[in-house]
Amino acid sequence: MSRMMEEYLQRQLRSAEQDLTDDKVRSLRQARIKALDSHRKPWVNKLRNFMWPATSMASACALVFVLIINLDTGTLTDNHSLVSDQQLEEQLEILEDLEFYHWLAEDEQRLRG
Image 1 (tube, rainbow, N blue to C red):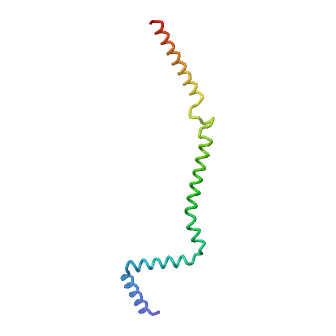
Image 2: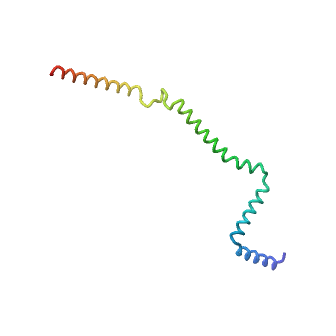
Image 3: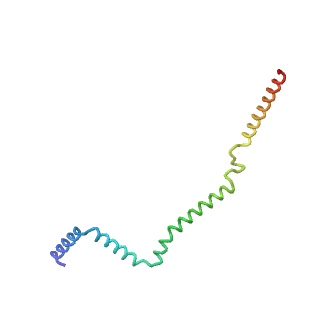
């Protein structure tokens, strides 16, 4: 190609780019997408459309499964209880002391009155 021909074609291309309307741009994009998709195998498009919902459903099922397993086995075990045995004993002693003080107060009131 000669240099003049190349410059002429570049000027023509630039003027055509400036004259493009939104409808032409949209139709060119659609044609490009259609051309790219035509090279793919049809099963690839079907697989691609199927993968998002399938992946989402599998993730949701896995999450539900994990939650059910955790609720079923419980998050508290003998080794990891929220309140230790020593704390339970201390609370029980406090309750027994309170019962004793209450009994003393009732007995004192009974003796006075």
